[in-house]
Amino acid sequence: MLSAAILVVTGVAWQNLTALTDGLTKQDLNLADAGEKPADGAIDILLVGMDSRTDSKGNPLPQNILNELQAGGSDDGGFNTDTLILLHIPNDSGKAYAVSFPRDSYVKIAGGYGRHKINSAYGFAKNDAAEKLQGSGKSPQDVEMESRKAGANNLIETIQGLTGANIDHYAEVNLVGFYDITKAIGGIDVCLNENVRDSFSGANFKAGPQTIEGKNALAFVRQRHGLPMGDLDRVVRQQVFMAGLAKKMLSAGVLTDSTKRGDMIKAVSGAIVLDDGWDITKFALQMKDMTGGNMTFQTIPTGNPDLQTPEDGSAVEVDESEVRSFVKNLGKDPASSTPPDPKFDNATVTVDVRNASGVPGLAAQVQQSLVAKGFKAGPTGNAEAMKKSVVRYGKGGEAGANAVQNALGGMNVEEDVDIPAGTARVFLGSDYSGPGAQGFAAASPLHLDGARQQPAPDPNSPKPITADGVRCVN
Image (tube, rainbow, N blue to C red):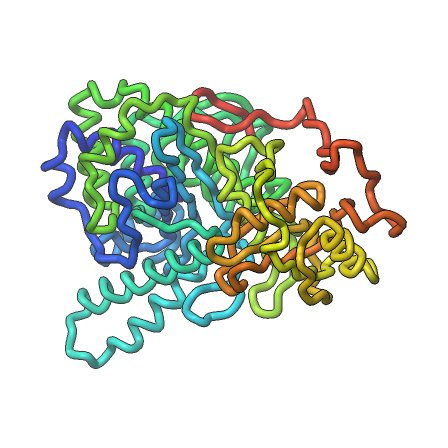
């Protein structure tokens, strides 16, 4: 299921605001106050595809519709969020980035639930809240909607903790809404590399370009069995489908057809949940001039796709620090680094060094190189193994962290509120090959410019997914 339906909202709201908003379900959620220009430099919208067998107001879906969708019975599915996309819109950039989170990403769940698959964050809190509300005297409908609010808030907190982003708005769509929206706009153009047939999702498609809608569209974005990369391939399916939907909406062809526009409003108003502080009119006016080439689809960095976990079986490995760095640098040139400030005084920064590379003695060597460049020595020690090196800093310490990472040949920097002011903490991952690494086994050679050499782009790698074309996928 795909939460790209929010793009339908942005496309129709400015022409049919009253007809659209009358039927929308709104929730009062714990969100940042976005305003016109958020203080953190971007509007971040969490788009959620809910694998539930109820509508946006908590009513069970008719069994005949569930049969059509090949979605089991009304008790199946639960409240797993099988599609999670962060729509990141930097201030005044004219661009948007849609970042997908694989449903099986193994992360820290907010609310004290420990580490689990990310698609359980909503369900954990929703079920606990419903249990506490039983016997409160509230109607079943009120219990349902209040517990859903708790689930949405816990999901928002989980995503914020993982990414470092401040979620400004929230949109949620269910199974039948997705089904109705795709039919209302006349289908979406997609392309497959090979024939596929999957009894679990109902996917049965030929290779090549094709237009899909309704139950076929749902099968397309839900399939993961029989795909080479499983859940990661499903994420790519969802991205190309969302790109196709955006392309159709941004072309404005649908908006000029009064019948399609009316069907779309009906589908959206019965299936979408939004936060109640969202000014849809203003947002639609901000988005309506965006072209397809200015919307790019990406996926958070992941590790082992078959990580074995204590309670959740096979999951997708995720490094939270890599995700935070990835989100922070959306839209920035990955080859660029922040240049050092020539007036910055290195002696104002105390540097702790943690060895997460597994190479004995590396932390002490690196700290010696930093002290030689004027930094103050803090404690050294070992840390849990990391692949990527990083410099972390406390509030107001970004300039110092940039000075440290430049002194070490370049690496990511990220804020950590638990680090004291005036301190930068270096974590040396297995990739580290900067000053102090000479003479250690397996260290990469240093280059005269002081920066680690980056691998050349693979000319055969797939082109980025945008809303400007149709890319064939698994």
